[in-house]
Length: 150
Picture (cartoon, rainbow, N blue to C red):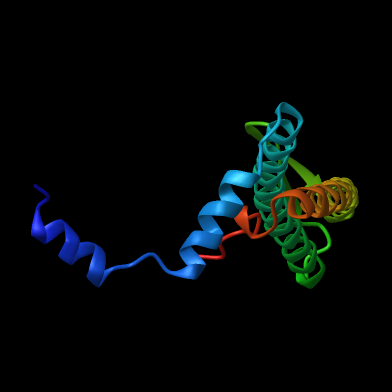
């Protein structure tokens, strides 16, 4: 004898056509080893882009600090003033002109690092776009490759 409450539950919550389509679609898609490799590559590259963007932000703040230091030195009135410049863990006093040159060199090097990181991000974004096309072509709406912006 069947339980009448189970019949009631089925009567109240019949499977919808949408649910059946999703279940059928999920069963039809077979994830191959190559597909899993692509999904893993996508995840690794997404994580790497996040790390690179954080590194770029840190370097941009450092660059802004160097630019502020250059402006402060230019605004100093006393040309004979010795300016302490940090090299490693120590400060060494240099003339304003020498310090200005050192700051300009540091800014140039930092900007080159930022440009290289941004180029790397663009390269990875192209790889991700290609992987998205391939994975969405196979899995359609059964896979979510969009980043959460929360």
